Amino acid sequence: MKIKRYTGTNTREVLTRIRNDLGADAVILSNREIVGGVELMAAVDFDASRFPSDEPGEGGAGTKAAVQTPPHPNPPHEWGGSEPRDVSGKRTVETVKASPPRAELSSPTRGGGWEGEGSAPRKPADDLPLPAVARVAAPVAPTAVPRAAAQAAPITLEQKDAASLATAHTGAAADPAIPAHRSMRDPAAAMAPKDELGAMRHELQDLRQWMQSQMSGLADAGPLTPVGEQLQALGFSTARARQLGSQALNLRGALAAYLGKGLQVAADPVSAAGIYALVGPTGAGKTTTIAKLAARLVLRHGTAAVALITTDTYRIGGVEQLKIYGRILGVPVAVARDGEELQQHLRDFADRRYVLIDSIGLSPRDARMAEQMQWLQALGEGVTRLLVVGAGLAPSAYAELWSLYRRLPVAAAILTKLDESPSFGAALQWLVEGSVPLWFYTDGQRVPEDLHVPSLAKITALLEHDPVTRFDSAPAPLAAAVGAITARTA
Image (tube, rainbow, N blue to C red; front, side, top):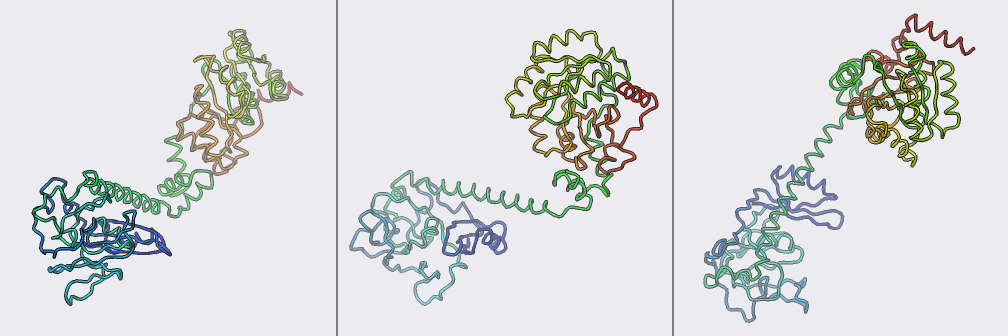
């Protein structure tokens, strides 16, 4: 295989050069920081099978050395040659010359080139094929090694990364007279190259996956289409706007495809008799919404069919506001200060077809929220809970609210204040992708006219700011009843 050394200001730049030069199959052998940047050594045509096996007798133990070394006056050191060491056993920076072999060998030099015996021309290190790969034992106590190891080329500290993966010659094997298993005295050190190779493979796989994810991310980060820009301006996430914008020719088509398939609505919500509790954060408009819903039911079924209960005893004027609506509609209003009173009021209103509960509006982080949740959970499955949320919240706020209230559980949502939130795409995206049914939406303060059953045409008109289609056309009986309620308060 061939190895090449690359330098650059950062790793991304060097990886790009390696990919362009050696191709996608290049292997990173080492990397380190240098003055002004980084240095990487890469190889191509990497063949793991060329690593010797751990079994005795394999990997060159039975191969005869090509050269003979003259007797050395001193015992050879562990890494070849009579390399000087300090008292700690570490190799010094100074290199030591080994006995010149008779066969033609190549040895790395500090200058970065490769020089051989005789008059062979000097070649750049970056273009020379790497010799046979062999194991290198981890530094242990100084012991004698085969004579062939003494013939290895001198290694400088600058080249120790490359030396950990290759020796200087294919024929540099153990002496035939010495058993192969003695070439490595430490079994743990013998296993180290295999472990390093496995770790290198994992690192290369992770690097490949990272590069693929980066490339796919760059591909997805293209400019939005005009329709995508409109969707993003309406509050949809960038990813969703890009997806829908690339699949539709205009805004209405994108909304029809997305909302028509994903938004769950009911043709006639709150038609069945029962107990309905409105829950939600502070400022969502629960009290006004429950008054609109009560007026809708009174107009359909009469005052004897509806009763109201409020637990909002913390907010100043909360109870009085609902009592005013009750007097206007002619329905009773009860106040529950704890869970027992709530249960008692429900028993008192057992003859009413519809009982609407207005709960206190608290932040999800308020300690009193747990108490309110216990009251509502204690009511059991006989209560239908509706989550009332404003249309102008951030996407993270919808996720936080839903993670809290869905434990009640919540049957559906009521989206409020659409008239104050021209860009409520985030709310619609939460409803669609969270599979939350939408039963009502409100777009004003009028009671009960500004409470609407959602439809694709109405939601699209609201997003497109169409003042004609967005409002319900109130039938004559409903308009007359609203007039009668208004006249009663005069």
